Image (tube, rainbow, N blue to C red; front, side, top):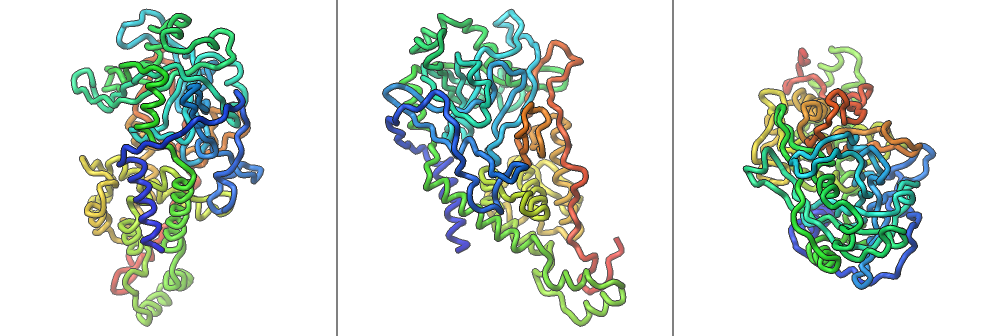
Length: 492
């Protein structure tokens, strides 16, 4: 069974990232312009269910919907992330399927000086296409013109049908001054209009759209509104707009170069991830009988006597089991942690917060950090990530004793917070997003923190959102027994 679901995850990795696969998406029947999404993904096993405070399962906008791409009429379904009227930059968390505020917009000038007027609120709605992962392994983004009043209403539960009129290539700078290093990553952004909009409804291509909008301003917004690379006090462009596609060419490119997460692959992955989560919890979630009985004793004398008559079995202690499980499931667990919700806080606080800590370790490794057992601290390990495979994983935590293992886990959440505070790429844990002006703002998930910032004209006015650190009242409970191999009590 173990080999089977590990193969499923690896198969999904290959399906998603390694093969330039093409999935025919056909000519689907035309849907309504606005449709309430139906819950499917989180219905079922409550142990893995993202739930609202009412106990009702949450809607997962990305997994519960389908793109329904019509290649003839050039129509597509999309999910709103940031409505045109808003002053917040919203994103969708893939794991929980919930919206969160990534940052606030502010007044700024075009960093490249090509557009000489002030930039603030985009003249379009930003969104993504459900179930589609682009060739870079990210959401397929889309910008939509028209329908701003419609899209700003209850977009947390609705999806919308639009007409694709073309696409642009938006290049993202991965690091430093890309004007010199040329380290740009290309991603296609679809451009669409609302069918029945009085201004844009008759637009059928980019040429027609450019007659109705200030395209220089649109380009400047696309290049500036998602932030820049900041090195000390110098800002470098984080994005730039490149080439263009016609509508048909864009949809053909999408069909050939992106991945459509079909039901059988998606639910197969979910089942495999649930099995991995259950196995990790079974091995690491609770103390062994030896650990339970030793911890139940009240005096040092009783513990010494118990240890002398009860040999410690190899691999029975938490730190030893942790090393084994980390090596066994490391790469697969990271994939699962990025796609599938690990535990429901409504069902078990203990299990949920265990996985919050355990996931933090894997996210640090994915960012290129590792734990030095001798130094007892996290540090950058250049050129090596968790996805490098088993050869790298076999060395990790090999020289960590029980105390260092506990420290690696407990300090992982603080390390992610520290990276974020320093402005580095990281992850942040959101319980409730206080920046969302709506009732259903329960997230309880790690979300990506990007290292790009806006160059606000009002320097005293921060464009950062209200961000809390990992909950201070949630602490990793040390699992070590504070004993040495020969049974003496450890003085620590």
